[in-house]
Amino acid sequence: MHISEGVLPGWMLVTGWVLTAGGLALGLREINERKLPLVALLSATFFVASLVHLPIGVTSVHLLLNGLAGALLGWAVFPALFVALLFQAILFQFGGITVLGVNTFNMAFAGVVAYYLTRPFFRNPTKWKLVAAGVVAAFAGVFVAAFFLSVELYLAGSSFRSTAYLAFLAHIPVFVVEAIFNAFVFLFIYKNAPELLEAK
Image (cartoon, rainbow, N blue to C red; front, side, top):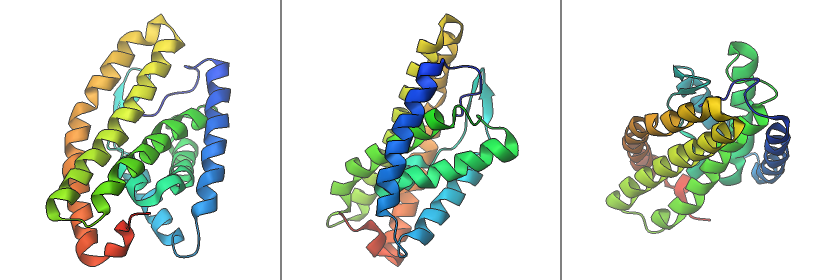
């Protein structure tokens, strides 16, 4: 779900950087020595998961796992995904530096939405509540990010509008895969490290 260089107008790029800067400021305040290893792990997981992608016009489809990362990290998902996207832009030319702000905001803000939506499921969790949390995290992570991506491409010009619709629809299979994956991860964490699911 990387937007390429040269697609978005300047005002949108600036807006993306401003919003991402705010998210980074909030996220960095939440990171402490206890949370840092989890931030690093989820950043690396996101980096690897989104390396394999299917190009669709000026964007691409791949596993996101931003909903999973957001559900576990809260606002700290911003620095986690920013670092991963930065290295992808530098090492593999996925996205780019000028669109890094927009790409980070799309992914990370969707993760923050997943965080707030999954909190109720982590209070007195049961097996089915954790499965539901996995579905909710996937839905928020995939479709909130896809919504922002589609709107940005739509506003970028008429030549990208067909891609905007296609990009949104193409993420439906991604949602299904991530819902199943997230559910297994939450169940595993609850069994082995339940403190990571503590509602804040």
